[in-house]
Image 1 (cartoon, rainbow, N blue to C red):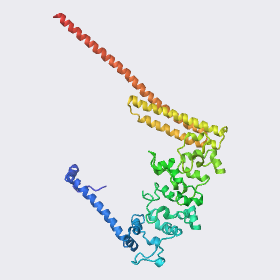
Image 2 (cartoon, rainbow, N blue to C red; image 1 turned 135 degrees about the vertical axis):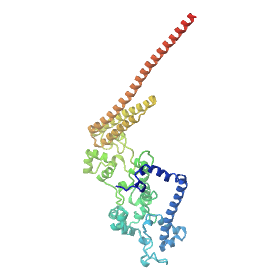
Image 3 (cartoon, rainbow, N blue to C red; image 1 turned 90 degrees about the vertical axis):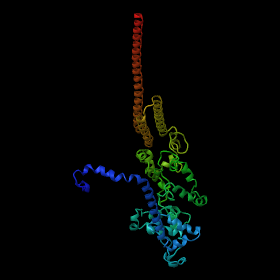
Image 4 (tube, one colour; image 1 turned 45 degrees about the horizontal axis):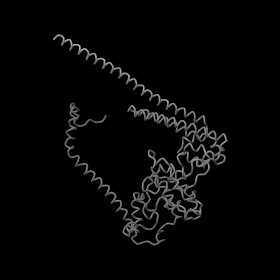
Amino acid sequence: MRPLPLFAANPTARYRAPLMEHVFVMPILPILPIIFPILSILIILLVADCHQTALAQATKNACLSCHLGLKPELARCARQWTESAHAPVSVYCEECHGGNPNSSRMPNIGEGGFMGKPSKRAIPGICDHCHADVLYMQKYDIRVDEENPYKNSVHGQQLLEKNNQDVASCVDCHGSHDIRKPDDPKSKVNHRNIAETCARCHDDNNRMKPYGLPTNQLAQFKESYHGRILYRQIKGKNPRLVPSCPGCHGIHSGKPAGGNQVADACCNCHLNIKRYFQKSIHSLLLKKNQKPRCIDCHGYHNIPYPGEELFTGESSSHCGTCHPRQSQQYQNGLKLRAIIIQTRKFAEKSRDRIDKIKKDLGIDISSLNMKMDDALQTLEDAVKATHSQDLQTVSRIIQNTYKHIASIDQQISQHYQEVRQRKRWLCRVLFIIGVAFSLVAYQRNRIKNQGLKTL
């Protein structure tokens, strides 16, 4: 049992406890507006003092203390380091550049292990010295298995095997001295910034020309549905849930997905579509012929929001691209399109009825909106089910949509019926009140006339 407070030793003390609380609290209340500002100032000073202490410890390093005192362009690297992810964990200059940080004499290349600016080919090994060390990195909860993916990537193979200086090394993506954590909004590898970081190379015509790679990927991505969500152009969508470049190409592996790997990459997010797609003839053909892939229908970097027009026409990525109009597959696509469009129009009419009843009656329509959300969700499930190319599967899901809409229409009819009943009862009550007033008036006039005759 928790021990009683001292004043509770007296059996009657429990009745005085609330009073004692007021005795202690009441004198403090008037000075609370003074205490809070003082505490805030003390906290700010404490944080600033900690920062200054860390900076003071860092400047004991000869490299930092020297560079911080140089011209702005020469001091920039040191100042960037003080705001980097390496500064708080005491990863200093010598970890990457070598040399003696305790010597006050300016080092020369090759002297005392000082290498100066590392070559691009040496950078992955320098980073791996720490980042591949399990025991060292475990206290920071950072992955240590990124060395092999990079070495086997297009970037890593070109750099480490062919010494190709065009490809990206660690510092090209993460920064050199200004390395920040990925969740830092200023980080070059932040989810919001990584596409721009990749585009620094992949938008360069001169750099991409020898490899025959296009340079419009970023522009296409920004116009895509994924990109519009990432750049907050679509309200109600979470930018953290859409892929940027690493989401499809890998973080350090940096290889274009091919064949069945495209479906695997897309299905990492689109799990509901995956279970329908795996039951389709397209899935079997993909395993056998490496086509059709998701990008063959939905695009690569310029992925638009999919619409029913994909089922018709012969434009690029439409069903007519592969299937002749007379084919059974094309006709099946037309039926899928028709059932989706018909159901969507039916749902829109129900939505209009909800808006109308709110305007007509001014009632709370939250329950109706919830049912409409359920109806639209099942309709979206039916759209996803079209990846199975099975009309029966889609029709079965569509029936749930109609059930929700029928329930909405029934509830709306009940509201109107209740209003009509109330109006009828109101008319009856008003009629009775009118008759009563008429009788009272008649009786009053009769009594008044009788009085006049008596006089």
